[in-house]
Amino acid sequence: MGYPFTLGVASGEPLPDGVILWTRLAPEPLHPTRPGGMPNQTATVQWEIAEDEKLARVIQSGTVAAQPDWAHSVHVRVSGLRPGTDYFYRFSVDSHRSPVGRTRTAPDPASTAPVRFGVVSCQRYEHGHFTALRHLADERPDVILHLGSYIYEYGKPKNPGPGRYVRPLESEAECATLGAYRDRYACYRMDPDLQAAHAAAPWLPVPDDHEVRDGYAGALPGNGTSPAAFLKRRTAAFKAYYEHMPLRARPTGAALQVYRWRPYGRVVDFVLADTRQYRDGGDMLGAAQEEWLIGRLRSATARWKVLGQAVFFGRRVLPEPTAGAGAWDAHPESRARVLAEAPDGLVVLSGDERGGWAGDLRADWADPGSTALGVEFAGTSVTSMPPETDGRAVLELNPLLRFFDGRRGYVSCTADMDGFRADYRAVEYVDRPGAPASTVAAFAVENNELRQIGGEAG
Image 1: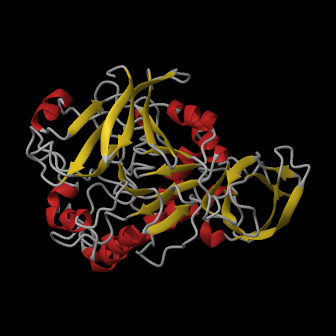
Image 2 (image 1 turned 90 degrees about the vertical axis):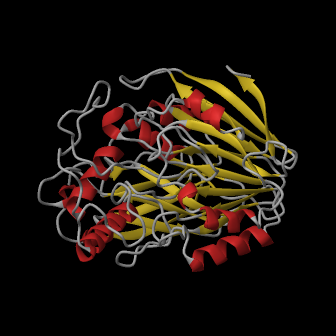
């Protein structure tokens, strides 16, 4: 076997006493007939987790089976760890050793220590280099939230347009089969900056539409595809997603458990929602998920209730009538029911936008002086081309929106018992590696509304 850890290592789903450790054996990641270039047999993988980066103080170790049916990916459930603590881990097969990854458990339920986390989304491989992820990795946050569009399923367009095709994909065809999705993930996971971000901190990922198909909503395939063919495609897409993510829940056919609650002491309750699988007509979440989400918001006791999900949440009037059709504006009754239960300290984090937006959530969308219900930070893209929407025009049409920036990057957040801060970080370019990053705007949340405290427009 050649070197099997070409896709790096990752951790995720942190609890106060444990995490998931991930890797996938792939000595030839894009082998045309054998996934990862692996033989069609189970391999035994050793793992170890330690208190120090050199792994001199190993506290747990073991073996796990890497099965061919799951593309030789492994998901190790580690428990018995201390809360709010850094750990370091590594895998080995035969004489081969993986890179060392850093992970961190969630804090103790009574903890009031600050929580530092990053927010990323929309990382289209062919649109540029993942330099923003390298900068986020260097921050070594407690956890990273990925809010959708981890991959893009598209094939290469006939006329990509200027600046839209910086890096070649492994295939010019659109993903529709399990093999195609696996190859697309492998293409992405070979990127050194993406590997660095996975190895730097545990992740809490949420898929959007591009992990399956652009614009999909619930069981509706769109684009003339039969329901049966779409469910087969979604089954393949979710299986490949699980195979490449440090998740606790395996998919069951065409279904994947996405919505979940991850408490971080007394400071943050991360409530992660699924805005794609259960859409039905005017209903964004589906009855079961909506009941769960509202129950979580009602019972949350942390200082900050952070709702992480994949599409723009607040009301937004756009110059182009068809823009934003996949967002919560298409489901206003669902949004109203969620906001009716808005607790003090609500912060909504959103993906999908390919541009950074920040705004207030209020009782009356047209009145900036109405009751403040919370705030929304919509993250910019890691690489995906920014929207062509005129940001200034949108800000003029929407009095509750406070900020727009179309540069690529990420959001860096810090929450404690006294405040919540979000920094919009942008890289200067994505058409080549090594771009510097800067903070283009910084916001604090006070009394459930935004206050700009720094950045170029501050």
